[in-house]
Image 1 (spheres, rainbow, N blue to C red):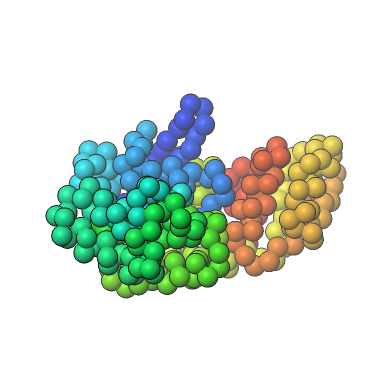
Image 2: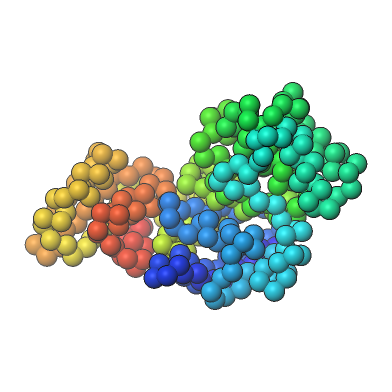
Length: 299
């Protein structure tokens, strides 16, 4: 259903994606994990035909996103990180407008709008201006807009960011219902617990590179409670800001000078995303471990 082969994208000297491969069958949830700036949204924008790759190819249901973007757009729904709704219109008017943009007839657009409002628990607020909606309500309305066209593939870019726990649970239940009906979902997130609950399979991306893939159990099984990073760095570097920030997030962090290298030991929970968080903190503060170092220390 979703096939990505060797996709790369750069912005100036910044490499957002580097040879990304991904294959997602129909009727499943594929998780796309990674820290901020990993390249998740860039990949989403390419799949949604909003951005052209520099190299490689991406297809939705066999249709190339570069050579036939109009057909791809008819196959997908997209809910981004921020609700793309018109505050001046009511919830119902927003959804009917989206239906008309999909070239649905006026009657069918209204039917689809009503269906989405019902499924997302927005019937009581349907005729209120969106400017009066809470943040969670706007996100649900945005998700409803992505469903009006009955997409084969639904792309959700961090859909639960900023939502309260109850709304997140509602969103998760809704995603399960869609998959049960045959929809393929690509779910980008920073939370392993989300893919743990929802995804059949996930890939982990950082600095535009796929660094791991598998089921949630397979990803977590690769991490032991103690993880060592080894890197050639000077004593004054390891005693700087990166140490303080890591210790704040991981209180059981210890540092040991081996005489040549510094060995940084993180006592981590058996929770995969904590590893990418620690990795990102080191990198942000000037300690670049590199892909091989990172993967080589995971057992």
